[in-house]
Length: 325
Image (cartoon, rainbow, N blue to C red; front, side, top):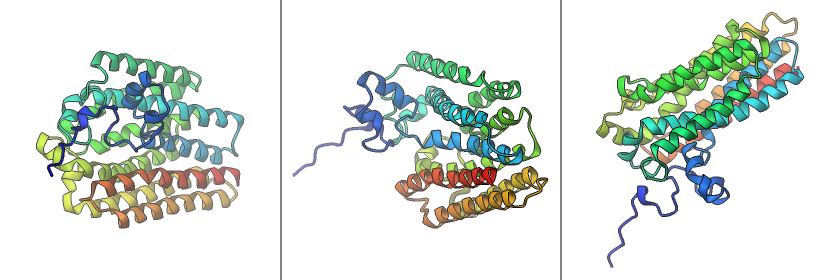
């Protein structure tokens, strides 16, 4: 008996996106009229919001540990950075989908996204992007002036990132520069200035992003090769494991350096020890990921990539404990 032809991803009658988790809240609970826009913001895939938020939490916790503990301001910083991460991740993803609409239409995993599938026009997407960015700006303007300046400066990275895959084999590095900017911004929001510790923390986030986004990029390496999109996954190929190990070591070392720079001047060794344990625990989780990873299995790549939420939160919890010690 002949099987009926599969429905192409771009023609899914329910408008769902191929790489979103099945049964997510956008597809099941959100009003129908809002679903294309929420899908455009990747609200059906919250991992990106977590990965944008976690460096902010690192910065709040380590800065608090370096200045005598948490204050009421830090509660607002944590809450507002979570809202801001949701909004700016949504605005960034919308901009990414606007610029990548032709590439997305040519890749099996992405051709069901709202723009290539026809759920949202480019004009509608631009309005949605601006609306999200303006709401995020309202939060940013409650911060210290140094943090506001950093937030405005980050827009250049957001604008450039979608084009990186066109001119460099290292678009993951541009993502790292963009996604971890919150480490600098929230440090400044807490402290009113930057420090060497904040720079080390930012660098740790960048190498962590190189780690997890290389894993993510292995899902699309065959389609990327056909359409000419560059990535570290294609660049590293079968040497990916060695590069991931280098990124792991760099992440742990840079986070430890951030802890030392921030907490070594304190009289008590306990906050420093706890913060260093956080770097080591995060590294242990990344090592577990490497042992589980199969770069030729897209489903495993996605599962391992998503597990980086837990890796980053492990470090955040240890840094928060250091602030409470």
